[in-house]
Image 1 (spheres, rainbow, N blue to C red):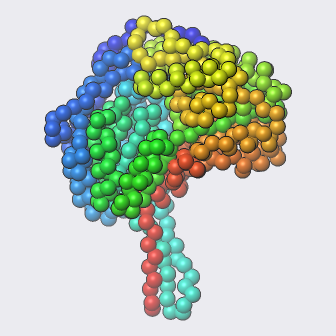
Image 2: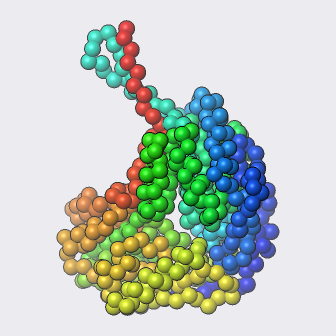
Image 3: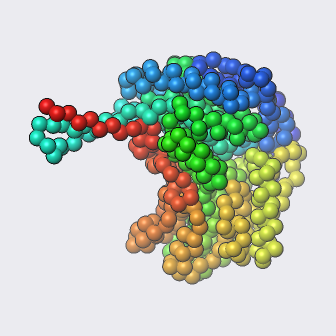
Length: 502
């Protein structure tokens, strides 16, 4: 691991380099207009790479959110009547504008999330792919004609939009988590009220500006940023207001459970993409070079702040030492620094509380006998931010928090195993099941392990499981529902049966 150029980065200087400064919005977007909160209060947003102020954003409270819900409810009456072709046209225009403005969107994303600029550019393309995909899927929402058991009758099943959707997104993918949900909802004929993470609201607001330019009608898309203090009341409004008929949330399992409980008061449909604790298994017949390369990306992308990143790495005892050496050699090539610093491939964590959790898990593991073989400290940089070195550990106990809980940070524990049966038992011995990965060249084992892993997504000989065409979601306490793919739009549709007597 090395440092990037390690130059002194000034947040506002970097912000001033935006080509289209109108993409940097600080007000909420409600009913087609940019509005302040009724209280005129704002909250501060910082650059996690410098801890400097990036700006202040309108702090919407529950009353403000009610107004946004009312606007979405009014707009739904006309939006649900539009043709799939019209919805597809508008969404395609939005996607094209995202790609056209990729560089500015990426800069905004890096400034508020710390993500290296190359990763940020990739996220913008990834985010645009969902808008494009669901625009195309709008034209493929098919019903069925069902053979009737009675003569002289016909049965049809048709799909209709569920209504207004309340959407709550996390800070780790400020653009893509918006579009993966909103694209499906709008394509289905729903209208939406979005509460983006208070750490990263600017990407959501920039996307609103482009949606406005693309011609999305007033009230169809509403974004209501709110501070951490207002988040509980805003979430309660989204989950209990009877005009909201669907709630979609990405975040932690405890918060997902709370939102599901609140949504039950009005029997809303819910989609929950919650925490993970992904196993990454390397069998003794694996291509070790490829496995090590994929693990670097899978574990340390976005500084380990992804719900599908490798959390527990199991390596067969026959190849353990060789694999660890190969992996460390690749991790050493990562360059830590501000996301806009030249050469940075590994940025800061987004929040101080996330950094403290990483340090706590590390200390507990070391106290239980773990050995740090690389990293383990806050690096010394010319900028003040939430930085922590990519860290590799061995001899980690299965009972410490690092093994049992989602880390959501740059800690990579590597465990030994002796048999397929042993590693499968250990891999599945958690309450969550979002993603899992393994490397093997044995075709029989590939099918056995892929089918036996208790997760919603499996990567075989790859550290990547997500694209716009593949269903994304988990099992057990990792949530309910699927996003992306042809299944994603169904989360925003009701199936209505029509029985006709001739």
